[in-house]
Length: 209
Image (tube, rainbow, N blue to C red; front, side, top):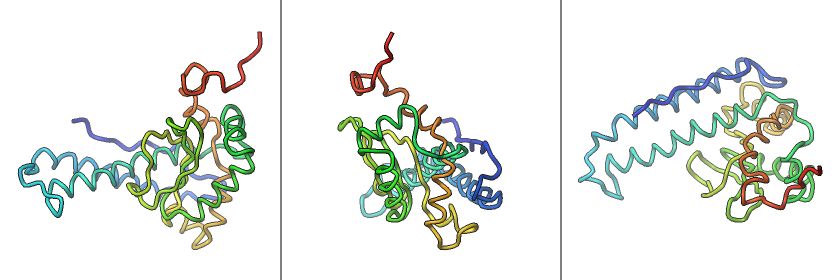
């Protein structure tokens, strides 16, 4: 089985997020990569015959695999949707936020509240069953996720994401996050679900000839 390898950051610092803050955060992400590889290495040797729902090595490895693997995926999405200039949502994502939340401003107010309420992550996601965008929170990497949703914008609100620069001032960090959103990246994540996809056929305004 191929090992996971950490993806390099595309920036060293961001407006409002220091090089030290991002470097320490990145180290934590690398730790999830290493632990996931360790778990994947141990699983083939784990005694499946001894699997037990109260306690067993196999159970613990499979449970912590969800934690460490989501730790990889969520951090890669988070780092990937930073590095932009923030501002109002534009492009296709702007259209669908207006459609599903009433306006980009209403969405941002809700996502800001989500950032204050969550203990781990805030996620703007496309719900494939409801065929609309929704904001969800996770209290841990593997606690609070919704199945059949596609994460488009990911916010890390664990203290490690901001404590060096902001201490307990989470609100200040949230304002910085909004100023650094890369909406082009969010639109790229949404792109596979746009007009040619069944889920949004007929919903997004088509260009006129």
